[in-house]
Image (cartoon, rainbow, N blue to C red; front, top):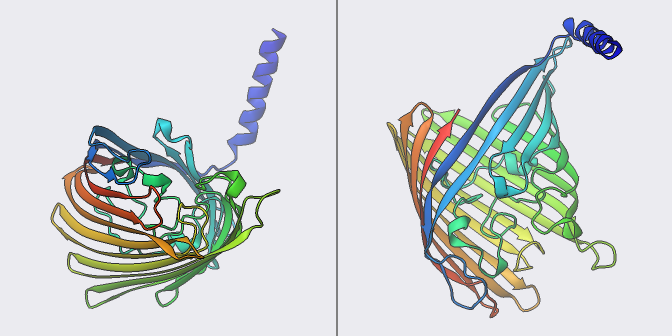
Amino acid sequence: MKKILLGTTALVAVTAVTAGTAKADMSVTGWNTFGLGVGDVKASRGGPPPAGGDIDIYENGEIYFNGSTEMDNGISLSWDVQLETENGNGNFIDENYFTISGDFGSVQIGQENLPNYKMHYSGGMWVGNAGLSSNHYTQFTGAPGGLSYFHSGFMNDTAPIGNDADMIAYYTPRMSGVQVGVGWQPDSKQNDGRGDEEKFEDTLSLGANYVTDMDGTSIAASVGYVDTNQGTGAGGDPREGVQHLQFGLRVGFGGLTLGASYAEQTDDKNITASGDTDNIFVGAKYATGPHTIGLSAVFAEAEADPDNKKDTEGKAYLLAHDYAMGGGVSLTTAVVYLDVDSEDGGTANAKGPAGTIMLNAAF
């Protein structure tokens, strides 16, 4: 009886505390993708086979928990938590951060991408759930020679340095089409491609973009810069500075959108080729009715050794079509051709096609 009375008393106390407290509005949204894919990418210099032609199932998705409220002083606060749906991902909560906004602009704090990433306009067009930048196709092309396309500056123009790790960023209000962002991240313990011993530290991120619409022609341009330190930590090599510079441009008229972007990353030890990397993305897509079709290409070069300038070159071409079936459901088909060539005699050589067909649902 005593336990029952204590429990009842606690329940009454909690009810009394929360009865007069306004709570944030909550919503649940998200997306998911399931499909089939096959790759026939062959490595020419040994190493683990990147893709042997077997059919595999592709799955990806996220669930977003969003909360928002407005305080008595007029400042708004929102909360975003993103849950990964892939069981084998090992990173179940993707992003988790607060956004505080008002007439002064907005401040974000938590696990989120940095301003140069969020404000960038890539030339690699996404069509449905298929794209080259932050690419979807590596499950079916493999990573020959240990190359990691997503967590490096090679064949990527978004500077994935410490994505979704703890950071703080400020974004100005958009004035005359221009917005500026600045962010800082102490380290990249979450989602950096080499683990904690070679993590990025003390990262400064700058981003700016401009958007306008003139007589039916839309223009979006962006610039980003990152300065960070990377090394092996205590007892290893001294930390080295890594810089990343990126530009992006998109022009749209009617259903046609054209894009181009460039990214340069220096002294990045987070990839097999440990030197400077250069990436050029170009793309176009056209939307009419329920159909969207797009073509994108990336041309990348990474120095395998800054001393002898032996390079790894990478190219990829993507053709994709998305059909909107209604009710937030679409069907994406895509074909990509990958060509990676290393001049240093290593195993980072691969060439061949991959294809996917994906059923997508947004809710």
